[in-house]
Image (cartoon, rainbow over all chains, first blue to last red; front, side, top):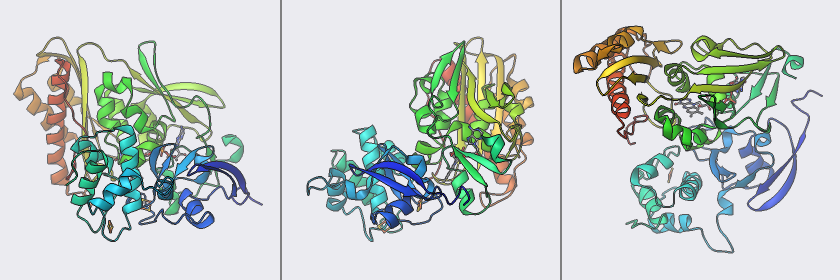
Length: 161
Length: 281
Ligand SMILES: Cc1cc2nc3c(=O)[nH]c(=O)nc-3n(C[C@H](O)[C@H](O)[C@H](O)COP(=O)(O)OP(=O)(O)OC[C@H]3O[C@@H](n4cnc5c(N)ncnc54)[C@H](O)[C@@H]3O)c2cc1C
Ligand code: FES
Ligand code: FES
């Protein structure tokens, strides 16, 4: 059996739960999440590192899970959109996107939510320029971004509307 | 280990160049050696008048570092590469090893006179970035050699640089870019200068004529104009989806002039923010 097919054991904390997994070394993080763990809230939009629909948090930082091998994340903490809600309560970022109509079809939304969460964990009160920069790696085909921008501002505690 | 795995084996750093290339089957390594869990490979430390940056240091860590606050050209570069997600994974070592003609680090590191430390079965060696990068996607790294560290000379009191790249949107490589470094005697008189262009040649283009238009001169608008014109003549852009040869040549002149003005202001002690420019920024 070649090294490429030999399964390897990794340990990940996914949305707070520690998991031990046996995977092929070539497994992408997004495939592991969606296909092995049924966490289908993380979307695949382009599979070319462009659109950001696959964005998850790795140790608190946003990354494009279509461009991370699961083995690279070994030992790390992953948060997906499913992990934002705590005890039946939506995260402030989710509330703000709902409130400000920061979505239409919703395909891009999990990615935007994760990039927004990462941004606000790093900078609690971002400037408009920091918001634009923070979500520049996420593409939306529907909204024209204005309401997404308002939602991020609202989540940061500013006036969204 | 790399030696044993043979020439088709590669190392995996952030994966932000390698994984997209593997998906396109443009890279088909026989084996990958993951550098992500090797301790003491990501650091930014002052040492003997240099800033030493470990190969596995992510662009985002450089962006937020005290070193980038002291040497703002490092911030200009690190903060503008692609988008937050790519900057959180991509590494400076991977970027230099990849030697993409559109990459941002190489022109900046060349303007700074930085060196690369490589390690391999034969031991360690240090080479200037300008000699390390031989051609598009080609460096002097041997098959079993690794980039261990990037060494940047610390900035003197009246030295400053600036880097400006233009790109069409965040998650793409620049159309053109200009890195400028100046060492001033006082507010007006320039002792030494370096101008290096990115994306307009197979490797970064060192514009010797721009440097001589500035070195040993009082910096006047005329001298700045001459440096920008020298950059435009030295550039060898290719026409592609990003623009025509004429457009890219004009753009290089504008970016050189603006980077130079920012570097001069910083050398005078002013705080100037510049970074990658794109529509909607
Ligand atoms: C959408 C997108 C946009 C981007 N835009 C830009 C941009 O605007 N500007 C820019 O500069 N870059 C850009 N990049 C590239 C990004 O900066 C990459 O992170 C970087 O070029 C490669 O670093 P990496 O750590 O991801 O390397 P990897 O992809 O892991 O590796 C790249 C190559 O270098 C080799 N390698 C890696 N580390 C070492 C080492 N220590 N020693 C020896 N060989 C090594 C690998 O074997 C491989 O061949 C972009 C990438 C994407 C996906
Ligand atoms: S699916 Fe990963 S960036 Fe588009
Ligand atoms: S809401 Fe449809 S892509 Fe963003």
